[in-house]
Image 1 (cartoon, rainbow, N blue to C red):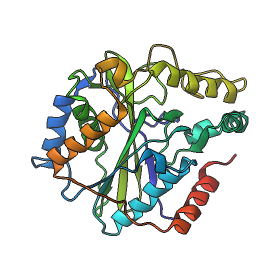
Image 2: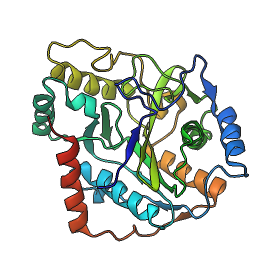
Image 3: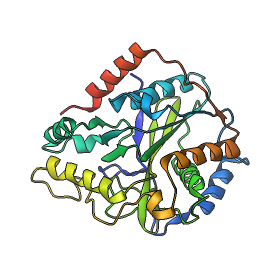
Length: 310
């Protein structure tokens, strides 16, 4: 398996955050200008980005499948395939970070959720627990990096610009900056009126990398916060929130539905596509790239063995 790195804008609980600490949240207009300036051209994104949005009903029950799909596509982009934007949802899942997996009762907490019909996986990109359902939009952009450059701030800022830009038909108040008490916290939380609706992370392989985000588009932020908190209450054993795991508190999370009046997850997904077409000249795929299912199954098993272990 290729040597790779995890860099969390959502925050890794080892205290090594992907972004710089900031006392003042930044508006997405400022971030967008900085990202474009750093890349030295009108668009902050490379040419040739493809967009693939698999139908929700086609999503396998195991939430590790889309994560393995992105790992395999990242390898292909590193080998010369065009960059790709992957927009997907899952009916009911919880992805957790590697530090979450090391909590004393994490296996029991994961098994409890699985008995309730929730798919649980240790997320390859790091970070902390994130509940997923039909109202949560996952967006990943897989980009080549043949020169192995490390431009963390610019990459996080580009992603904030995309996430907030896609929300701009409904609000111009999206800001970047850590939200205390939110689940999966980090310096590049994206929020409206002090309530987080999005977290961002990076995953780097040798010659390509993945910028990835979750966006709570519709439904209630509080119900997702409660699920994350219940997982930690069960998994933590005698440990206290703070250093060992995030202190997920009431009033910290919201959906774009609640915060900005976004009518549906589908509406936000359509805005993501429109934004990337307008900003980067991206093209929409009518069918996803063909990946061998047996290789995907094997990679999924490898990722589980590598990350979902004591």
